[in-house]
Length: 150
Image 1 (cartoon, rainbow, N blue to C red):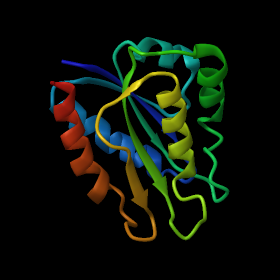
Image 2 (image 1 turned 90 degrees about the horizontal axis):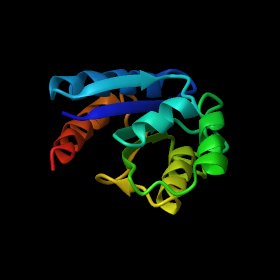
Image 3 (image 1 turned 60 degrees about the vertical axis):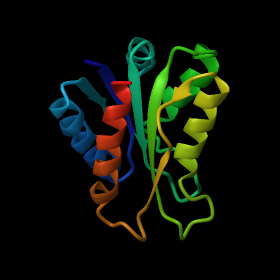
Image 4 (image 1 turned 45 degrees about the vertical axis):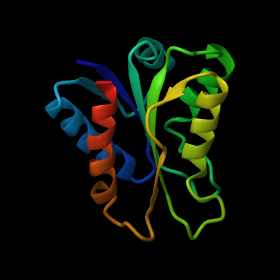
């Protein structure tokens, strides 16, 4: 089965919780999964030839959490074109802020610009409507797991 790196950007732990739930689901599907709470470029470089799942929160200003900013900047400045990358993206945010899910949208835009292939749609999770994000994210991860087999 597939090797999947889950790269997490979290503010208050919700994205990490979602990542741990995703790890369990993907493992049940027979995939080899590793979660990176403080992701580094070396981790990314390995998984860019396999599969990547980015799960990130968004700050109130619409930015990425500090835990994933160094990785984002390294990908932007050092990696460049990566057409072999296949990825999924879950963005957590709050629609009461102007830049809803801005962090995840920034990450998706960067990967698209670099020629990566997104599997499935970006999942935007609104904390004001879904205080327990796993009710939205777990079914999405189940569907995403099926895309890996295609």
